[in-house]
Length: 414
Image 1 (cartoon, rainbow, N blue to C red):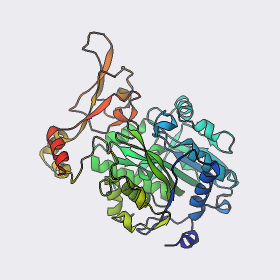
Image 2: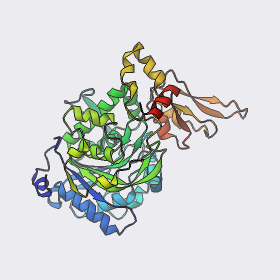
Image 3: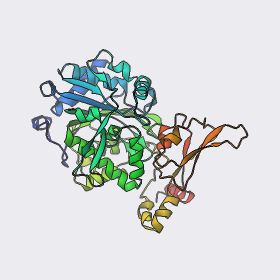
Image 4: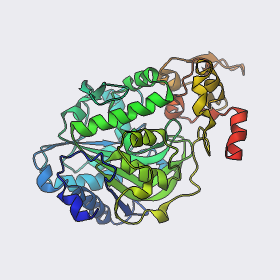
């Protein structure tokens, strides 16, 4: 599909077709000439019909990835330079409103929002632009008539009210979903601690991946939506917050989050190993292979990271766990599955993991070292392996423990 053909498509048309294109532009650093970033963002926006004429008078919500209070150099959140470039373009579009809207992990309160905006450098990125930071902590519900496992979602108000949503995601590894990109970023439209309720309600791994696809599909049908991915510097290892920065070297964009993530998974060398993408493919939302996705701009193949470090929860090769849930009411699956454990030597007893646990299986207990200080303890029998504790621990004191048999199988590539 040519770039001209993409521009000729109605921007209001949802592009969940297998031939939906993905925009790819190489860029090595955030510290280049600011005009270069603005030019790339402008090309991405206008390629998919998000022109000044279309955006004029529209209420626009920009949904970044601000999973927790982290500085930009940690590569856990959307980089402020990307947001600044996007807002520079939107400044010229005469939008009726531009709001930065996110529900990070933990409580969805004004105080928490202010802390995260400042800690991630988002407040400075917004300064001088026409956009505003959201402090409305109310939420409503949206119907998802086409949802497979969920027919309704709780969604934060600024997203519900938007005519246009820019899904400004961050590409990185993820301990629960293997990868975080366009699809997973929409989970941040669910308000605060309600996200933990969804983890508890959809504790089955397959169902949780299905609900992510339900949510992303619903939002793209609710408003005109563009997925814009910060893949300049991503995160490998135990993402989405406990990994290490890794240069990927591009910006991606699409009207189809499933097609974008298909290409992104190829960049991270985990293609066909991301269940939410496989679920989207089964519904006909994206092709099986990244090679089948029409791409505009630069060739992504030289950017593929063959040595990209997966999270500790990942299994290399064909995952032998796929048949275990059917046996012994799933108990064997749980015994073989990776699980979170507290590293007591670095745990400071802040209790963040206990507050974020969807099923309240983490308890603060007196340390056995005689200090009298309380430290976290995870009751393994009740743990649903959502890894929220690892994601939100500010001290990276939650490790992933693999079953020894699975460790051996993983090393053998079985």
